[in-house]
Amino acid sequence: MPWIRRDRPLILLLLGALLSADLYFHLWPEVRRQLAGAAPGCPCLRAPRPALPPSPAAASPSARGSKLRRLFAHPLYRAPEQPPRGPEETLLSRQEAVRYYRRKMVRWNRRHKLYREELNLTSPDSLLQLGREASWLQFHLGITRYGLYPRSSPATNKLLHDMQDFNTVSADYSQDEKALLGACDCTQIVKPSGVHLKLVLRFQDFGKAMFKPMRQEREEETPEDCFYFTDFQRHNAEIAAFHLDRILDFRRVPPTIGRLINVTKDILEVTKNEILRSVFFVSPASNVCFFAKCPYMCKTEYAVCGNPHLLEGSLSAFLPSLNLAPRLSIPNPWIRSYSFAGKEEWEVNPLYCNTVREIYPYNSGNRLLNIIDMAIFDFLIGNMDRHHYEMFTKFGDEGFLIHLDNARGFGRHSHDETSILAPLSQCCIIKRTTLLHLQLLALPEYRLSDVMRESLLLDHLAPVLTEPHLLALDRRLWLILKTVGKCIDAHGEDKVVANDTKQLEVPLFDRVMPTS
Image (cartoon, rainbow, N blue to C red; front, side):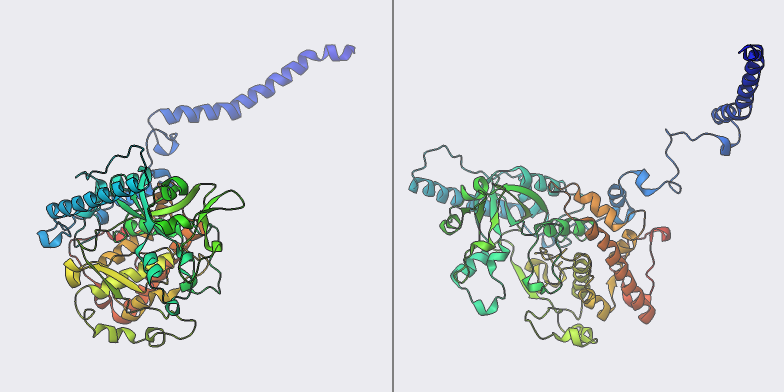
């Protein structure tokens, strides 16, 4: 049309004016702000510099790297450890231990050679030799009056790697299983031993570990109607208990790691126990399975199966031989009733702790405080099955309690069994160092669930725990602090918080004070 051609310059002039206005009012101010951020001037107008880390007060915990690394770098975990002041504070003498284990290895090699000759095995088989730097031996030599291993011990991490990587040279039932095979008093056992199948595996460096196979999926919860003494034993609970014990700085759980075991190669082909060999079979799904055998219970429905050969399980490092380092197994004062009806005295008497305080060895020393540490640990993992605890006899009454057999923990994340805290709530006393660790782990800067999640990612079977179980740790931690707060309100901090060391001082901003 002719009028469009006449108005074309006017239209172009209008579009140019609109573009100029947009440049002046929108794009130019943005360019000025960018230029101001690169030049000196008001700090609030400067653009952020990604290369520089934010200040600690402003940075979110997730933006500042590993929470677990920061936790172990905290002054509370850097406090000087008490070094052994003499041979009486070290569990084993190096010379005596090496001599003892060398004799055991010679006997084992001799029996192994005879076994191979009986079976006419002609394949080459190298005999084991004891290395002085073997990680399991260094672990045994590092046990002191204060714990199973020092915080900075490189032997612990090396032991975990060795248990993961080394080949097995033998497999056998545990002593519990063997006792049942020889003398099985069925009236004293509620559930068949086959449900709690565990094996002793020996590795190529002559170290030993307790293997507990996977019996329950991580997502499965223990049914509400299930009694604690009929519950499954969970391999992932053993692994998680070791990590939690190390995070709490107790160091009373033997090093434990998860591993995929080839049940044919690592168990069946290396075992010399004919009974163990006889319980292997192939399932209809072509998976290799095995089960525990007891005179009163021998059923394949209690079997564990590979897929087709690989089976998840936990490996817990063996403690020194009982002949070399005797241990006492002592009933827990807060033991539960192992029958379908009836209760123990502590369950009906709120003043039960007064009776315990009058009994040796709970009437002096740290034994009662150590029992309360154990109760706090068991409450966090949900373990109701702590009927006994063990101690090395060499360290006497002041030795630490060994937190063995934690496989019945982490069964129910939706329920907090507060009765496990009875020693704490009835006695109203706690170690100062234990309380400081709990307060620290309640802070968002660290948070128990976060450091546990990060620590468990280091295991080869990660994820070890489901998210609900990790979040339950935070909830239970606050319940512990709430219980301590009630005790302090009732009795005062001086009577509740036992000062087990004067060297630990933690800044107030790193503490969460318990409240009722």
